Length: 305
Image (cartoon, rainbow, N blue to C red; front, side, top):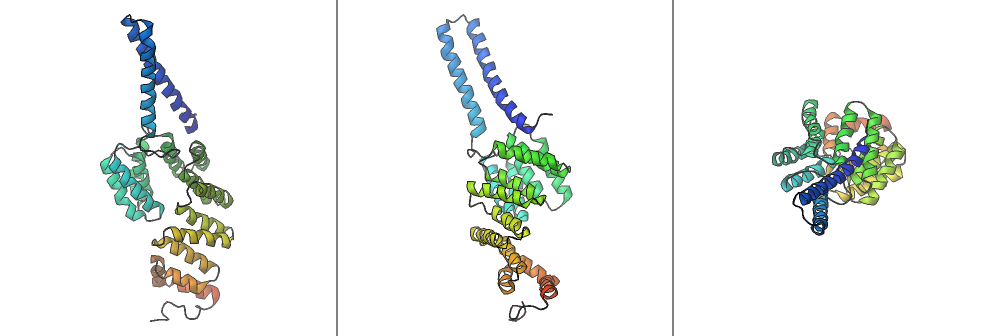
């Protein structure tokens, strides 16, 4: 069976065939009118240039050079999608839902919006409703978008090596897209291949050093390898990029707790929802007291009440 990468090459072949067909049609028209050959060449050149221009516009309109395209007929839908994507990438999925829904309301065949909506849905039923719709909309989108959808489809079907192939193809076709490397890195991370994940995250950082989610994943990859210094550096960068979000605080505080920096850990946990959740369940207190014998002096959450 032809891979998606083969399909990418087929698109190029089809584009060339379309131009050749247009030229043949022009030749037939000229012959039917018995026009002199002097008139035929300019018409051929004009037709060729027009065809190339149309293909370029169709492939590049509103797209960033070298990035996975975002296929939508609506500028407003694209704007909503980008807002939702940023929230989702920063682990604020519930807030992202309404933006993906608004994107779909503006463009009902917006495949990536359905994909991203699926990924932030709170239930399996809602996931498959959105994801199955995304799969029905792959005929008119780019190879990169198809690879993203088919990669998730492979994961859902338990076809891990197929998912790996999809993401390898994605970075091969779009080597300058940080999100392509991020997806491949997350695949390796999920397989506990942390060194391979770190390699992809660093490739993405070279492309876009301000892409915050990278540093969260990078920090955890280093942490699971016991590389706490590198993990701390990654989490601090994550915190620097989005200081008002709760997750960077949570990730950094969790690392500090892991390495025994109890008091600083509590200071970072305090502003986060995780802290309140853990205190309510006595989890944070339990983790520290059971692992280290006692709560560090002066840092108990009730010490200042």
